[in-house]
Length: 125
Image (tube, helix red, strand yellow):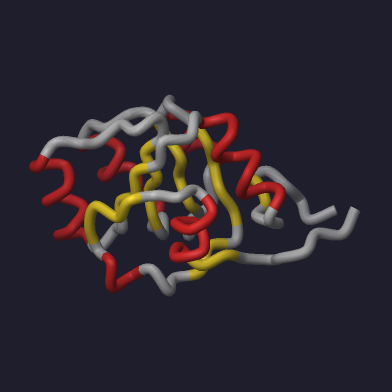
C-alpha cells in the first residue's frame, strides 16, 4: 500500500495533534520520516531510528536524554502530560522541541500514521 507522505514537519505534527509547543519553536520546520510511540526508553533505544519523532506519556529527564542519544527531531507528550521546568530547560539546551497533546498515545500514533508518517520498523512497503 502506497502512502501519501514520506515525511511531516514538526509543525504539521503539532497541527495534526493540536499540540502545544513547550520549547524550541524555532525548530518546527524540521522534517520527520518516522515515529515511535513508547513509554519504555530501553525499547526506544533499541527500535527507534535517529531523526524520528517520539510520542510518550513519560515526562522525566530521561526522555530528553534518550532523544539526545538518538538525535530525535522532537518529543510529543500525550494525554496532556507536561514535564517539569528542569526537563523543559534540558530540552531547550539540547534543541529538542517538546510538544504536549491531549490525545492518548494510541490515537496520536494513529492520526500521524493516517497522514503517512511511518513507524520506525516500517520497511516502506
